[in-house]
Length: 412
Ligand SMILES: C[S@@+](CC[C@H](N)C(=O)[O-])C[C@H]1O[C@@H](n2cnc3c(N)ncnc32)[C@H](O)[C@@H]1O
Image (tube, rainbow, N blue to C red; front, side, top):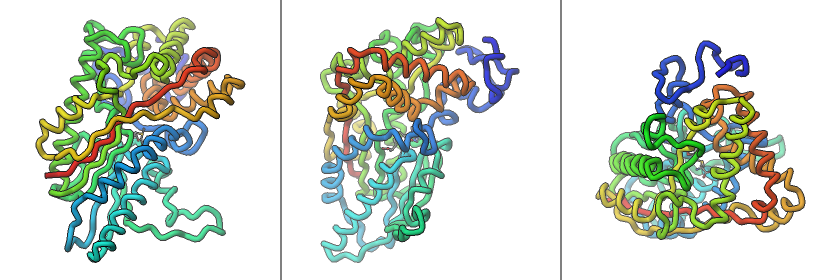
């Protein structure tokens, strides 16, 4: 690849990432070559148009839908008499309001239970945990008692002590027997890494012409499924060590309905067609190739690290762990956005294209930047994505649903 097309952030001494190269020069470069995502994955920080903070409506809807399950789980959980403080972790907290509002809800609901049962109310510690590149500053700036907005706003006292914990939830994050409640919202479908075989150009699992696995070749899907199984087992192994007996584990993650095989990650045809990881995404990558901005290998080496598990796959990992008793495991569908918005966008496809591109920027821009090693090229990618999304009027008429699983389990 011609490095003259790279922007000033790019070290021209490093050529484009080839799947089989040995890469040692920079963390991002190395990470995207080896498939390990700890040094590249995060949601887009800040509060600009393409930030996660401004584009987390679908995860917020998923949380709203699962709120009754969370409240039910809290109403049935063990109370820890005699403990001076309870420790709650949000694993994969991101930057937006979703994490703060859920931690508020959890703390207030547990407090009410202690008060109702006339047990002295403990203090609370809340740990906001995410990968190291997460924009913790934006998250903590949203804490009302630390940063009141404007002179008129009275600082609101938080009902817990807050701390940030950088690291992957597929590894140990806390000392043994530390946590009373662990929650993870819209995060566990992100994998720890892209499987090696998928990054090997000579393997049958090389995912040619696709950025994701919906409808991909068996070998690609199997490699993802295997990685996802290992990941969930690792997550449960770590939480089993960190959580106290009787502690509550509450997970909301993207998933697929029981009847679907893994190669059909999304279910119905409309969702498959309209989901931001499928057609428009692939067209935008192809446009870069056709315009000679990148080569095919660069396109094919980009893979979205997400896997939608089935109920059976989730159960299998819990059975393997033996440390948790599942209390509830439900599949739900979340509509991508309201019918009102859809009507508005049908009249204004350009603004639909912009919104969709921002949504994808919010979740994938950091890994696309790292893969292309150029924010200029990445911007070109998003321009193509925006244009492709806006021009397909047929797609606009369709409705896309996100499948989610809501799991509550108790540490035995
Ligand atoms: C879609 S966001 C959800 C954020 C927030 N929980 C919400 O509901 O709005 C997914 C989050 O999971 C985080 N994540 C992905 N893989 C992770 C890992 N291995 N360890 C910790 N966090 C991870 C991402 O960095 C991102 O912040």
